[in-house]
Structures are given as structure tokens and as C-alpha cells.
Image 1 (tube, protein in one colour):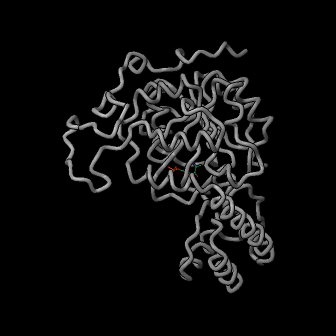
Image 2 (cartoon, helix red, strand yellow):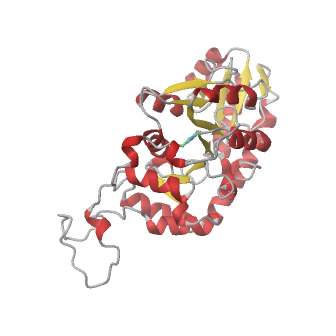
Image 3 (tube, protein in one colour):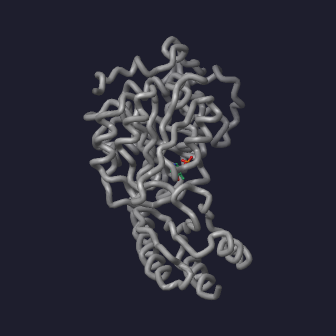
Length: 348
Ligand SMILES: *Cc1c(COP(=O)(O)O)cnc(C)c1O
């Protein structure tokens, strides 16, 4: 039976007592016109980036808060979601002691971060329908696993996990459940950020790298209880999100209708690609997609991968991943790019 959730049972000892580094710009929040800043050894000549960026990214968070209907105290921003995920490991996982659970085939970064942080990664392969094996996961959880990573929609399988599976895991897992929603804006499923108040043990991560079209600026978003956010704030580098990133993100987040239009075009293209792929003679399975990529089983993935490379088309070969034998992953590109892909496949 699950014990009552208490965040203090999960935080690493050294982090519990840690005071965050206070940067020069943390001390004075109220900025008025005539203030003189001689506290941070900056160059005073204005060029747009001569000052340190806001360490709490208040403008970006306020905009996200409006868009998502989540209070700013439930938001933390990182240098990509990869930094957010790393902060979670460092806050909660004692090296050489704690464990995490991941569900392959899935996003490779969870395992990489587990290795870097010397945390054992218990892998529970998905079922054949790419859904989590809930009973196996809960059995494995008895070995003091601190974190459970659910990627939904999942990369590389492109499906979403059933909400009742996710809910059962959240309700029965004794540690933190991280729901990676990098592809949620393409999905028919609702985001779990709507359930944050109900479940104090979830952390939802999103990113501006996929649907928002800003992989180059590196901005990851973490939504969680104010308690969890304050733990992560204690260990985040003070200026982890640079000024140019904050400006670009703010501009994009202020035009959400542009983003929706692009998402709609990508989804139309995805459906077109799926129907075309079904007509390629060496394609054996086109898996359904709830994201902006498609997992496709072919006769010989290594061969087809190299043939595409020779035609100047780079896709992702996932054949070595569990349940993905002879599978290629195609990102949905622009209409012209997708036509090139289909033309190339037909010519093989
Ligand atoms: C692409 C992707 C991310 C995004 O990572 P960023 O560091 O924010 O670019 C996160 N999770 C998954 C599953 C992804 O596929």
C-alpha cells in the first residue's frame, strides 16, 4: 500500500540543508527607472545583452502561466528539458544508492542521466501495444525506486499511454512520477498539468523544442507543486536561461495562434504521410501516431536507412531498441520534405 506522500522523504540529505546561491540580481527585485546597478561587474554600455538575465525568468513564466492556467510558483524553466531532468536527478537521487524506473523503448536521455548521476536504471519494457506494464512496474517499485519516467506521447513509439494506466501508476508509486510531455501539443490527450493539485507526486515536463519550433533556443519547462519547484530552484544554476532565449520565447508565447496554425499543418502532413507510407511495398507496419513523428517497420531497417542516406534523406534508425526491430522513425517535415521522402521510398 502506498504511504502518504511526503516530499521530505525523497529529497537528498545534502540538498535539504542547501541554501541557494544568491546572485547579485537576486537581491534587488524592484527595478525603477533611475536605479543604478553597480553590483554585478557588468559592462554599463547598452547592447541589449550587457546585463545578466532575470534568474527567475518572470516575464516568460507569467506568459506561460496565462497560456496554461498554472500559477508561476508551479513553473521552473531550464536550458532545455534535458537540464530540467538533470535537476530532478540531482535533487532526489543519491548516487550509488537510489534507483529509477524507465520504460524502453523510450527517450534515451533518462538512461544517460541515470549513468551520469550513478543511479541504477530499472528497465521495464513496454507491452507489445506500447502501453506500460503497470503490474511489473509496481512490483519493481518495491526496490526503493525514487523516480518513474513516463514519456507520453512516447518517443520513439509515437503513442500516448492510456490515462488510466498513468493514473494507476501515479496513485500506487511511492516516489515521483515524471510525465515527459515533449509532444503533448500534437496529442489528442489532455496534459497532466491539469491534475497537479490532485497529485503532489507528479512532475510534468514540456519543451519549446518541438511544437513551438524553438529547438535552437533551448527552453524546457517543468510544472510541479510549489514544494517541488522550490527544491529544484535551490539547485538550479542562477542564470540558466539566457537573455536571448527569454526574449525569443516571450515573443513566440505571445503569438500562440501562430503555433496552433503550424501544429495543424504538421498534423495534416502527418496524416498524409501515414496514408502514403501504407502504400510502400517494403513497409510492413505504420504505427499510429499521436506526435509529430511516425514509427514504421520495414523489411530491413539498416538497408533502407543507408539507401535513404544515399538519397540525402536522414531518418532515425531505431532497430536496436526493444520492440523496434527493423523500425525507422520519420519526423513529419514540411510538405516539400515529406514529398521528397515518399518519392525516395517509392523509388527504392
Ligand atoms: C525532444 C524531446 C525532449 C526535448 O528536450 P529539450 O532538451 O527540451 O530539447 C524531451 N523529451 C523527449 C521525449 C523528447 O523527444
